[in-house]
Length: 174
Image 1 (tube, rainbow, N blue to C red):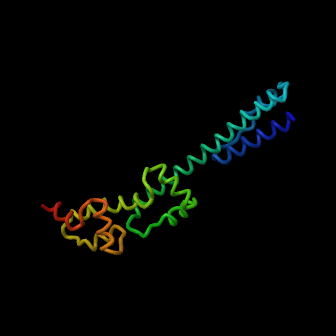
Image 2: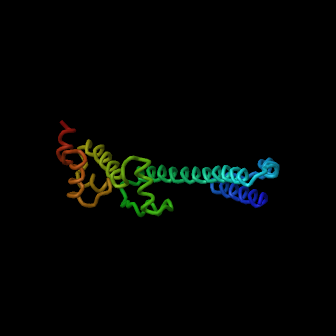
Image 3: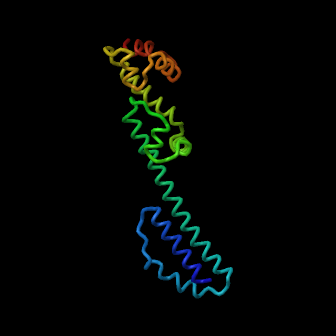
């Protein structure tokens, strides 16, 4: 029983290390065999086992959280650069190899806003910058920030800012 307990713990730790992208060093576990051999009762052995398995699980969870947090950061960077393209939650989640449902949940938890609101806010902020230039038409701005329909762009812009793009342009040029 002791040897199987030790075997399972070592296997779980090796798995935890590999999932975390770290190198597993068996020699750093040299105290495990003497510890397991000195344990007298099955209940003590069970406690030792549970303690080490919990550490392995924590390591795996931590590595997974780091990976998913990194995916959200990379997705935000991608959106910030590619906001003018036709972007969808499915496309972005596929790009980072995460299911759309899970990605949506992660994105909301990490950023505080859902994917479409984040994308919309980026696009509207870029549109505001472009509206400050009097020589660019609203239709051109609409296309530049990723909207193909000027009417839809105007509705979204007004919903977010409280004014139409034309009104915003007039206010910024006074």
